[in-house]
Length: 168
Image 1 (cartoon, rainbow, N blue to C red):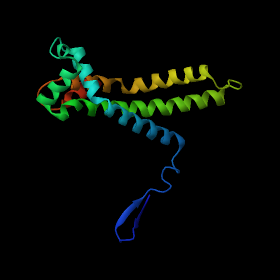
Image 2: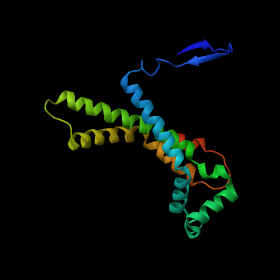
Image 3: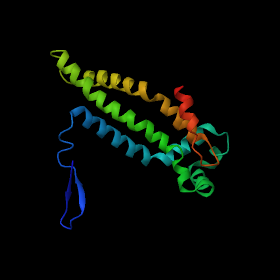
Image 4: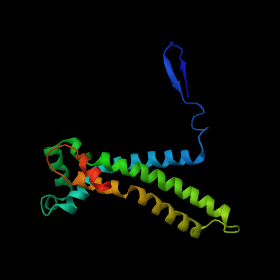
C-alpha cells in the first residue's frame, strides 16, 4: 500500500501488491469473513422474521410472512428488518473467516501429514468437521447475542450488556 498522486494531483491509496504479499491463511480469513458478512446481511430480513416467528406466541406467527414484513415496516421502519444484524455480522464474519481458513489449513495438514491419504469426500468430511468445531468454539457466544438483539421489540437501543453477559 502506498500513497500516490493521481493525474489531478489528488492523493490516493494504491493497494497493488497488498493482497499478493499476504500469507495464504490471511487471504483465506479475509475471503471467508467478507463472504460471510455479505451473505448474512442479504438474508437479515428473513432471519429477523424467523426469530420473531420462533419466539413470539401469536403476535407474528398469525400474520404470516408478508404480514410480518408489513408490520415491521410500519412499526420499526426499514432498519427494523436489520435489528440484530450487526451482532449477526459480528458473529458470522469471524465464524466464516475461521471456518474457511481452518478448513483449508486442516485439509493441507492432513494431506501433508498422512502420506497416501489422497483427496476425496472423507478428507473433506474430516477437515470440515474439525473446521466447524474450531469456528463454533470461538464464536458461539456471539450467536446468543445476535438472537437476544433480534428478539427484542420496540425501542432501537442495542443492549451492550448482552455481549458482556454472554462472555462473562
